[in-house]
Image 1 (cartoon, rainbow, N blue to C red):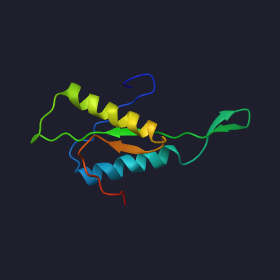
Image 2: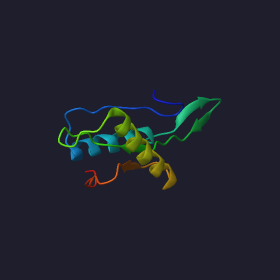
Image 3: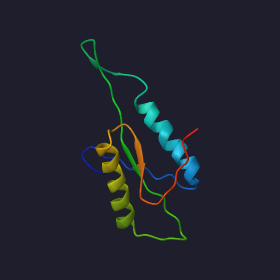
Length: 96
């Protein structure tokens, strides 16, 4: 847990397309079905993601990586939620 409603995951050793597929699978798993909250009530849950890729060829500090991921997260929220946004300049193919 990184913040009140924010979680962080590190996905080492993945290519950008493989990481994009992993994040999209997680987003779909979160929204796959309603959550039972008792008293025969359910709650639909979705998640917005902000992602950044680290490359030793273009090093950035941990603070910079978190800032870029946070900006991408808020872009996801601003653009309608329940989506994945990537830090600027990263081209990501559509997940398979």
